Image (cartoon, rainbow, N blue to C red; front, top):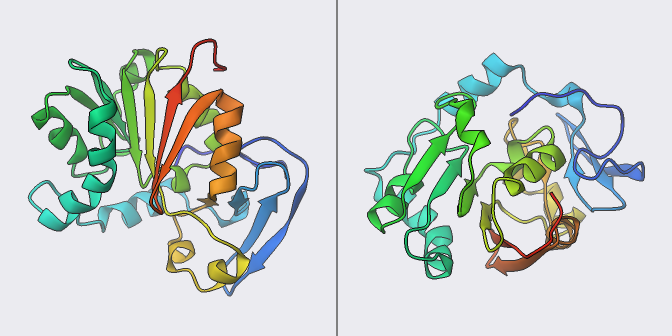
Length: 222
């Protein structure tokens, strides 16, 4: 998602300390020695039409109780952190927006954006009290740029709520089903999110194995 070139640097922190991490039958994986992001280089990215074709196969819709239960892993810890009347953006909502409906039903008006399905770019010029990104950051070709862009849309006290499965170590990665999705190009560990929190000047909460809440403090970086 969100195409860019590759100059051999880390797509999150632009670091030059990039080393081999893992090799399988389909792709080569690199790791940044600075931020610990694991990623694949540009040659392994899908063309936009092939990427969208993969997303079109997803069967995630609001009437699916299993999908709603999955999203509740992020929703439940997020709700008590929101002030009454907070408004948000569900970034990368996919073809069947669901979390936005759950948030709206809880009293928090939530807009939706997706590069392939709901591409109202004007929404990325507004301010929000919270932004959700569920199963999104692993698809980003320019995670550093996009995360900073989303962060700039939040005021002091705003929350960027992320859901992505967390990388453990290279041994677990070698048999991890999550890396086999051809649209997954970036993989984040707890250490990587600690780096991101420092980069942004954010308060960090990691909940379970896949929910990350970044809260904007005063005088933080954009």
